[in-house]
Image (cartoon, rainbow, N blue to C red; front, side, top):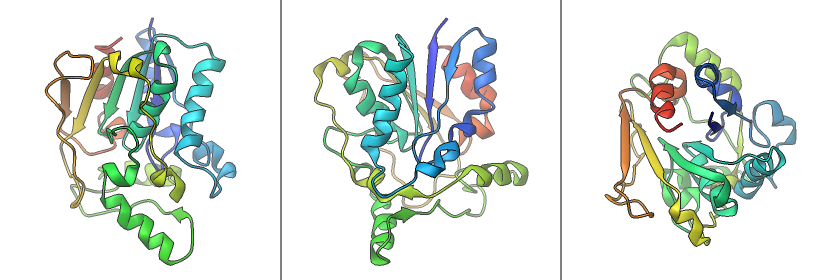
Length: 240
């Protein structure tokens, strides 16, 4: 039995994994898919003080409180920063890092550094004197709403989206623990409907632990846990 910890991206909630969790559990694994502070069922905690560090503490706290070990830690999109910093805090408890169509940071980088298009969102909010960044708008297919184009699925996704504090995109990751480099990594890329201005960094041929990089692709949109839950689960199960 493996333990999967699935971390959603910006604006989303733990509910977005609803189609993946039972597939992993039916294979005999333990699965956690929490909502980060200020989002989903924790939306009442939303405030300008909520940032990347808050979300890292959410994940580290869950791992330590549940005494989880050998965790397969999956970060989607913005959560690539969350899982990176969390693994830096508790590397001995993480067996594998999965970057699911995710931002992959270097030490000291923020989301705005990793994905420069995020800077435009921050600047727009700053001009109005606010701190809440609204979800990205729905675009014509194939981009859709975070890559979701089916009307029913898009409506379901829209129901779980909420604003994200600016601080989440401005706080830097901390990757100053050499032990984090030993953790194996897998990158899963969604290849359909990438919005204009979104840039994915090339994955180096070699992982930080010295082994060849592992990159898998899914021919679907960004929110692959909604559009291809079976295929995504099959990939994740290869790691368990």
